[in-house]
Image 1: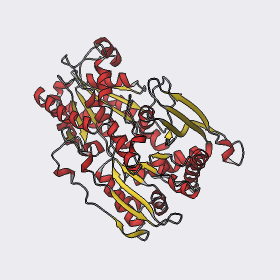
Image 2: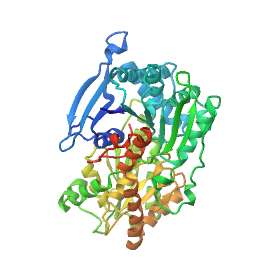
Image 3: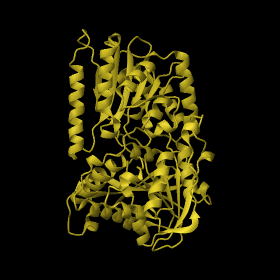
Image 4: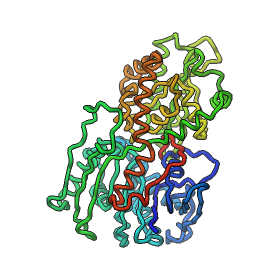
Amino acid sequence: MSRLIVLSNRVKVPDNKPMAGGLAVALQNVLIGSSVVWMGWNGKVVENSSHDSDSTNSFSNKQTNLTGEDTCITYMTTALTTEQYKQFYCGFANNVLWPLLHERVDLISQKSQDYAGYQEVNRLFAKQLKEIIKPDDVIWVHDYHFLSMAYHCRQLGIFNRIGFFLHIPFTSLQFWKTLEQSREIIHHLAHYNLVGTQTQKDRTNCLNVLQYYLKDRFIKDHFVANTPINVLDMKRNFFKPSLYTGTKMRVDLALKPQHSLMVDTYPIGVNVARIQEQVSQLSLEASLDSTNSSQNKAHAFQQIIAVDRIDYSKGLLKRFAAYRDFLAQNPSYQNHLQLLQVACPSRLDLPTYQNLYNNVKKMVYDINQQKLSEDSAWQAINYKETALSHEKLMTMFRQSDVGWVNSLKDGMNLVAKEYIAAQDPDDPGVLLLSRYAGAAEQMHAAVSIDPHQPKSMIEGLKSALMMPLKERQYRYQMLLQGLQQDDLQSWQQRFLSDLSDRKCSEAHSLKTVSTQMSDFSS
């Protein structure tokens, strides 16, 4: 029987612990089919037991049968060695590829052995796949940690259909040209059968980069570059699947001269029905307790919520500065407005992230110490680092008057979509959305801001706080319609249907039973 094999950097084995890793947590709850294998890192780092890393990277299996579903998920995980963690995870993945793809080449820090470590881990998982693969299995690889995975699979004789989805931005050619290993990485990427991006802009960038580095490998008359949709000319909030224009091409690769590659856009969504079910079941007492606050939208006190992993791509410091200036320019909001910032520290082994974390903490402290109000009990920013359950987070979203997404560069940002899905239709909050988040390509009814322009953030925030009820309801309905149209299940089914070349799409059609998503990509 055909199986779906999923590979992601982190694997979330079912337990009761919240996890600040949006991709891993999301996949835990959406990869529901007849037979699924989920491979990845278990989060542990161990010392090498010998010079042979294969003996150290032993894979453990855990099977789970989902209650009420005809589904068996096999979790296949391994620890990373200290060297692999430093070179693959901290090194090339997060000190090179992450800043490159977020257009921060100034933050790239690469040691000579990092790229070799990246390839070693990609090859490690390919070898494990070789051990378990069956002829009809379909493989779905996730994110920038595994750009080279398909190449190593082909080298080992695995010619099953392999799809790759990039959850973060695909940067333009000018940034790829700054990286020494780009030509080889893009050659590796071409070994996938399907490459999926979050936005039309990312898809266009991907095609341009493929054309540049593989121009001598395209088979004549088999490169079909359809004209991208001009999203600025579209009046709808969200695209219909039929409007996407996939690009198919044939590439001459050493092991497979007639290799077929398709590139298309698959914007990830959220499980709207599940989120609405969660918030509708919560009592008022539970809502108040989950925020540790005696205020809500029914009172004069107004609350802004922002939920981010502490990363330089999220624009936290720019948000704090704009919020501080807003309060100074609009003193009537002092003591009547609070920013609830949920921030999860991550990658603190990397100096860039440790410095950012320290700066975030210092700026929050400094703003709260300014005493803009005579009320000593009021704090401008209510700062939390605790990883929250999905139910508590959705409650906070529903209670808050404004959801503020301030990304400087983001693949999608599911916080924006979750915030809207959690709102009360009778009294919805307003989404303040950075134009640089991937979600902005769809969510046109949000209040658009430019986080590089303080005036834009300040004016946008004031507009959101003062927005009349009828306008809030209209914007909410427009955004909700789009969320329901391009939801999580649609994302799954479209990608897997295209990956299966539409011949066996129903075999891997997935059902969504629940979802726990927040924008904390690990």
